[in-house]
Length: 307
Image 1 (cartoon, rainbow, N blue to C red):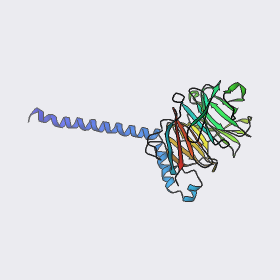
Image 2: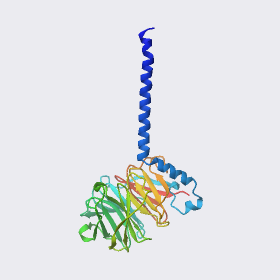
Image 3: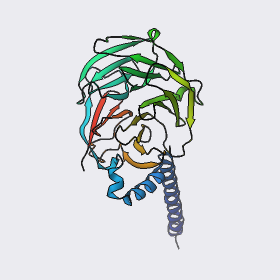
Image 4: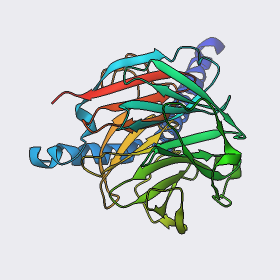
């Protein structure tokens, strides 16, 4: 028997070992990705959704029924500004968005057209905004760890932080991934705040004025199985909470008890999206249930329920 013939089994064995090693690495990588993205949790929630009755679906936001109608529309003139959050104003029927890189507040139409840009003087990195009552808005600055309640009307052209009451949000576990999300909960007369990482929720009582009562209180929740928390919103019809995660490419619906109800993935090919939303940083909803979203750097999305 020749030496060449004797080498064939050895070569075949080495090839099989290499193939097996690559298979193990691929499986390990897939498991790590699934764990990081909480796909196992999404699978459980997806199965739970299949058993929800039509009546239960109608009592919720029910994100699986939403389809994009404005997909990745650029916000004109904001290519280098990094849209960080979005809030709906029921009085003006317009949207307000904060820009984190170059601090300013922008007013938008419901179709994503820019109406005006108001510089935010004294802010470092505004990441969250919400519309309260009587023309008031609350803005969270992640870098300064502050919450500022401002007054905005049709004549506002600029906002200076020195002219408004500020509240210290205190230290976070990760000061570089601190308070980023905020939304006004009119039913319970409180602000809901969200820390980016690790994801956490807080409440701060208010009567809708520029005065906050007491101190913020942490909400115990084991339903935030997301990589980070980018933004919050409240559905004015059901009172359910929307929780946005840019890193997980996910929008979660939580009920008034904090339990997961439904979800929407922000990957291309789902819910009518042509491409994955690159970095979803803001979300809000109007009284008709229409859903609005912004993504860095300057992309606008509008979703409507199809059923």
